[in-house]
Image 1 (cartoon, rainbow, N blue to C red):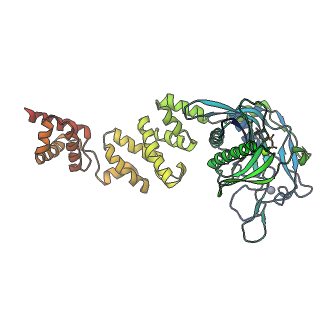
Image 2: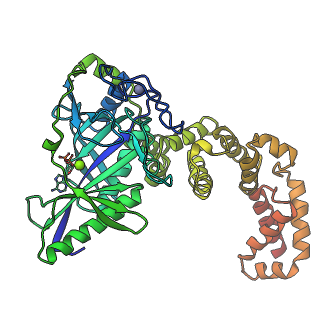
Image 3: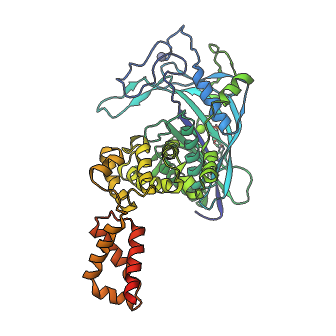
Length: 481
Ligand code: ADP
Ligand code: MG
Ligand code: ZN
């Protein structure tokens, strides 16, 4: 980026809420059912019907508002946003405009070096989704109105971000909070989290905002970062060529990695917003607000700090383990079986996460139960098996999720701690490797590793490594005399 300029970025995020039913009717929000089956006169906007607000939508929105330190307005109002589009049979979308439910919050983002920055939240409001136009069925455009009336909330940030990285971190953090609250699944690829990026540039030191363009249609976190980067470059080129950025809506084309124009930007007055006469103002009194607040789960930041203090984990471990609520739960469930906090962390951060990444699955689909992984760790700590054998059992667990105690019994993997048995293995290896004994006696202590390796092989990895080491060293020292 040309260093004369600074970018200014504000994000509008739409999050689809995990309610069973729609926002103003009893239709199901279930995904993947035949087109145009989850509908009723209310979500189709037939004349004379009356919408009834889904209480859950209010509770979910208040939760995210509290989690992002917003003011929760005691009174908020639904408004009609009027526009024509084939996937909007009513001809208007019910949203909130002048009086949203939450305002003036913030989300703290953390950079790689540990420093943080607060990004302001302008407002969070409730609204309904529109249907879907389907263009790729080979002929004409098809309309599926199942999604009409699906509850959304829109989270609007202040223009506080300055780099594509900050936007990426903000989105990641927002998704983390939403999924911890269990109010949105946060899946950008499937459209349950959608992000529009407002981007402008200005000369460094300038305090006035430049003209913004709005980029839509990014379907992954990386795409948001890439789209903003390329939009910044596009605007700088325009200014450097003596031109002017015009306020417009643009589309990100992920296949070609480029921005394409969509339409000139509409203005708010084009929508003829007015309070919806069919809906009462939403009133969230203090008692209800407190009741919702009491259901607030531990949020990622708090949980991370607790992992450090309660389990003495390095900050890095705590960060990785609390990256998602499921992973943090999985980790803490292991601790109901073993109190070896650090070993449990190591197993999750290396062995478990490797499988999750390789198989592209999430913890919910991980084949080994937290209980069985806990038992495996306990077997090592109780000195029943060696760490090496545990690593061999792990792939077995991936296949069967059997109780590791059973596997150890069946395959006779119990660690050999019987000194007699280990002694004879040591003797056998020593007598077969006279040359290495001489090397050791002449001061090359490194050959110890060779001997240990051979002895472990001889005992099929089952010898207790500590006892092997002790016996081996004392026998070698005896030879010195
Ligand atoms: P609209 O709904 O018409 O897009 P909003 O007022 O809701 O308008 O603003 C949308 C977003 O644009 C907000 O996130 C805000 O922070 C951001 N924004 C406003 N002005 C600018 C600007 N000049 N540069 C970058 N972002 C901006
Ligand atoms: Mg906008
Ligand atoms: Zn309906």
